[in-house]
Image 1 (cartoon, rainbow, N blue to C red):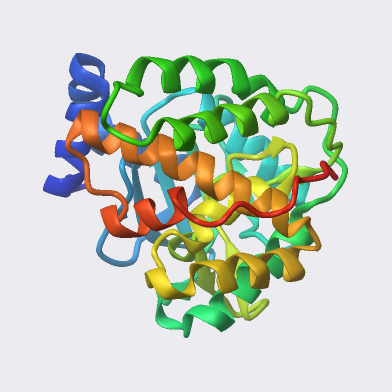
Image 2: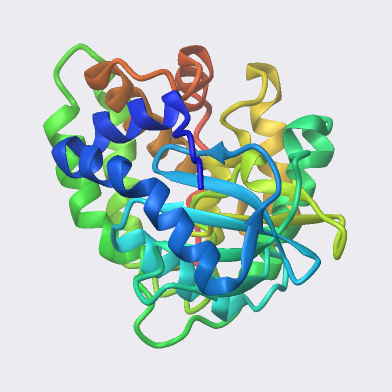
Length: 294
């Protein structure tokens, strides 16, 4: 079975995972072949990819599916567990999974994403999905609050004087400290953005790639709005919040804090995941009312 690893995937994996990533890339054709044999699939199209995963359209018993093979890490098991828990309600269906979750057989969706839809409508669709995904979390689900300490430590390491106004960094610290006390009992996607919501047949739109944490859906407001035009940001945060049924004040504060972290991360790594102007607009936006955790 001939599998050509997309060059951009290879570059991203080498950059992120080093020698372990290089070894995984060498094994990738064998991993794909083994999964196809195990689940009775045949490759039915050209590969897609993210930062650390290869996705192949496949057919199994005459039905369309997608095979996702990821570099093995903790998030794989979390994604697999989240997909099982959501059981296809607002997300792509999980058909089969390896024991560690690094190889998944999924319902095939797309290729059209919410990026093809007008920003206002797309934001409301994403918010509605966030609301639907806010189902009771199973015992053992990683909490958003547990990420606050490492998030704060990273902020302190990267917040060199002069990169951003001190007040903006202080506001981010306040929000991260606030989220450390988050007692939300429901699930959130934790990486919800327009590229992770695809057109589907079973439903008009379905989310893919859930991280699957327990916590407030306000956390997802940042990735939903951060690729919009600067003039639309405040209105889009409100649209998302109303659709997701979350506190707009908390959503705006999450956007500000995550924009601070994203800006600092890009400054230190040279990445270009988000437009610098949009990040600065979110960072310096007017302060909303104090949030109430749901």
